[in-house]
Length: 556
DNA sequence: GTAGGGTTAG
Image 1: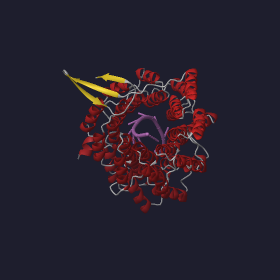
Image 2 (image 1 turned 180 degrees about the vertical axis):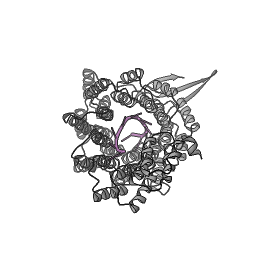
Image 3 (image 1 turned 30 degrees about the horizontal axis):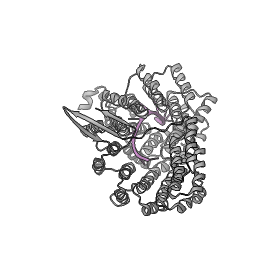
Image 4 (image 1 turned 30 degrees about the vertical axis):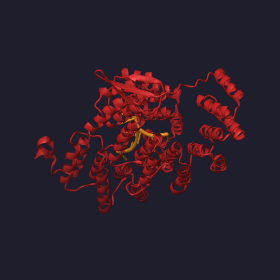
């Protein structure tokens, strides 16, 4: 028998009491082949007690076998009356993975019925479960219902707030931890650094960096959190320094963080250099592709697409979306469309990226056709979101599709319950303004007030532009004033205003604007388009990348 | 037993 050959000591144990088996199971749980040994050994236990079963449940949960955990739990629930908190914690972990709130709610109800929902570990598992279900309120309630909270419970609620995009709230909780003199763990510091990165809390993040140094915890997860923090703050050199002075082991996540940090800080060459140091993984390739998209680098982008195919990552929707976007941003709409067609499980990003790709390149009809396909049967219940809403409107704006734009502006609200944000209004005002429908554009404002939507600079800029086209002097001046008050340092706004005043013949105002720009040191960057040339021997191949960027001519 | 770091569309 293979089992006995590998672990002869187990043969000696066969026939002893199940309590002994259980202790052996715990000892070997984390070792290589643990699942194999554990499960097969379990089959040999003559009389299973609750501890042995809980141990097996835990083994399934730790190995990510959520369905197996759930199935075993169902059997236990039908056959036993002695379920305890050690039964429920791995089951809650499995429920959180399965993302089926019904199961988790049933388990919680059973826990209340059996009176095992109050223990600290079970309560912490509930904080995490509700957090993963997106039920922040229930997650917070579980935390505040605890009479005593250990550092793990605090860490769970910190990550719950972070998962729900509330980094400031997480930092408040972190401050409470200090007040209550809870001793931090490395988990706490990781979450706190992530909160600082998201909320750009520079000083606080640096203080935590000091705590990391003082604690002397030279762990790859903490170094990764620090790299991520400095990258988010725009301090890529500080992030690179963390990497260069690293004394712990490195791993994929650390390298991926470094690559995405370089892309975030526009160090595209550095991102691709680091990429070449590691074995390709889907996340690193996604970041590297976004470097190519931002940089309109079709040459490297195609090579990365080759790696994606060779490494067998084509089933990864997120990565395929990045490939699609890379081709679209480089002006290769046909290639983008081919990639889109081959995505087996298209998500909302796949559909929206392709709709936007058509829209940006002036293929308004194709964008709308694709949106209709998104609404059709071939789409497996992927619902459009506010970005899809904007992509459709923007496609209509670029192609001058006024009727369609109007139809979709109201349809997205009525059919999908999406509340238009200022950017949707700005886009719709732009559509109406270009079509001479200035009165209708103005009539949108009461609706914005009703929905408590504050017009953003983009809304006022769209109004200024609409007033320029329609020579609406009075309202244009009003919108111009609002725009400059809201955003006095954006050079683009001065261009919009200057064009408006020129159109209505107010050359004195044009001159005044130029003086204001000069006084405030506001400089409008140059426009331009991007051409990449490749040399093959004596021949030069031109690739015109569709996305306009800034004036540059790059020779590869 | 429970908690942590990285990726795609505007």
